Amino acid sequence: MFPAEEFAAEKPAAGPFAAEKSTAAARKRTGAARLAIGGAVAAGAVLLFAGTASAHVTVQPQGDAAKGGSAVVDFKVPNERDHATTTKLEVNFPTDHPLASVMPEPVPGWKIDVTTSKLAKPIEVHGSQVTEAVSKVTWTAQSGAGIPVGQFQQFPVSLSTLPTDTDQLSFKALQTYSNKEVVRWIETQQPGAPEPEDPAPVLKLTAAAADGSASGAAAARDRPPPRPPPRAAGPSRRRPPRPTGPTTSRACSASSAS
Image (cartoon, rainbow, N blue to C red; front, top):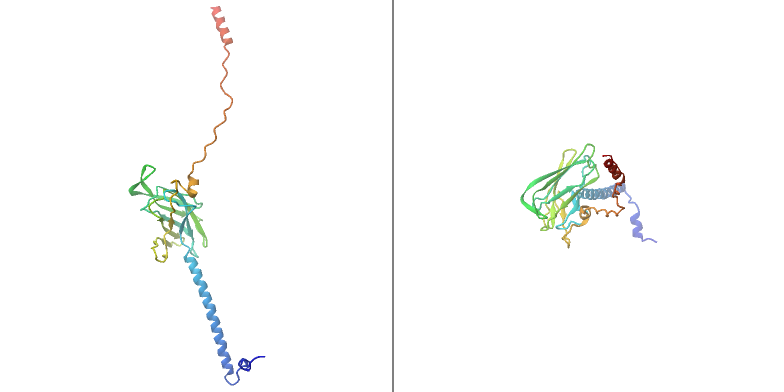
């Protein structure tokens, strides 16, 4: 059956200190259980906070963002506060690689303001000199609008022409909450360094298209609509010649009378 030593170990201790030993053992087990539960809660909290911290303002293309082409990109803005809504987004566009065309798409409930600035060095686009470019786009929530707690909003923008001498574009952004708090997404990611706490949104550029044409969603959006087919030739609408008989008769009658 069972060894005598194991059976004896399972018997409760006898003597005047038996109750105290049992109580101490119970306390020890309870303390260990509490430590285990506390550790699990702490681990869950770490995961929760890590997930919240990773929800940054980002920018992603709809399709490709090819060098030398056009692209439609989405600025994705999550609400990271439990007791405030996001009421404003300001995106600053790069001055070292200015974009000749920046067209934000209307977003219901948001007012859009586009700021242009004079370029220190003009750029050439399709044979023309461009001396001004968009330096900032601001989205402001109208009354009753905004990004609620636990939700996000995307702000689409059409960009052209993307530069060919860089692999990425950085857009510094400011996010304003209804409690007047401002989060500055302006930190630059350094090569080989950990991700900063508030990184600026970065758009990764892909290789230029082989034919140099626009690609992705921007190509479809910027393509001119097809021309309507030519109208089929119908019957001629020329008026038939007016009869001259009665007029001639009247003329003859008038001559005779004279």
